[in-house]
Amino acid sequence: MEPEPGCVQSPRLPFAVAATGPRGMRLAAKYGQAWVTTGDPSVFEEGTPEQSVAAIRGQVERVSAALAGEGRDPADVPKIFLTGFTPDYAEPFTSLDAFVDFAGRHAEAGIDEIVLHWPVPDTIFGHDPAVFEQIATEAPAQLS
Image (tube, rainbow, N blue to C red; front, side):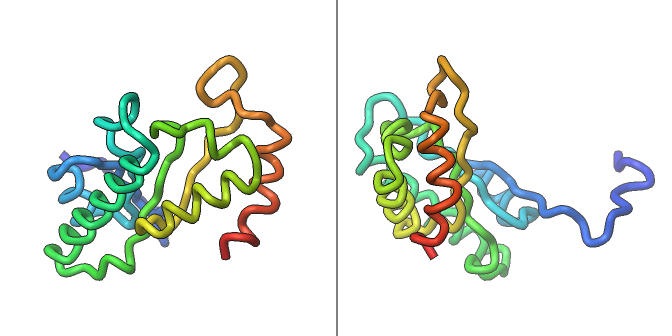
C-alpha cells in the first residue's frame, strides 16, 4: 500500500536510515540519502571509548560495502553519528577541547556528521549548557 498522493514536495527531504545491523544497513544502502548510527550497543555499558570507535569504524566499513553492493558510491552518502550511546557519552561535553578530540576520532573512523542532544537536566544528556553552546559555536571552525 502506498500513501496517496505520496510526497509532493520537490526536492524531497533527505531520508536518513538509522541502522547498526546488516538488514538495516542494506535498507540504508538501498533507500537512504544518509546513514545514522548510535554506535555499537554491545559496547555501550561495558566497552571502552577505543572499542566504541573501532566498532563504529567497522559499521562504516559495512555500510560502505552495502552501498557499493547497491552500485552507490559510499562517499555520496553521509555517515551520521548520534551521540549519547557510547561508553564515553558524557566526556565530549566536559569542554570544547574534549569535544573536538571526540569528533576528530569519529571523523577518522569515517563519520561525516555528528548530532548532539540538547542538554536535558537529570538525564544522561544533562550537559552544561554553557559548554554545549561553546561547542555549537566554536567547534565547527576547529573541525573544518
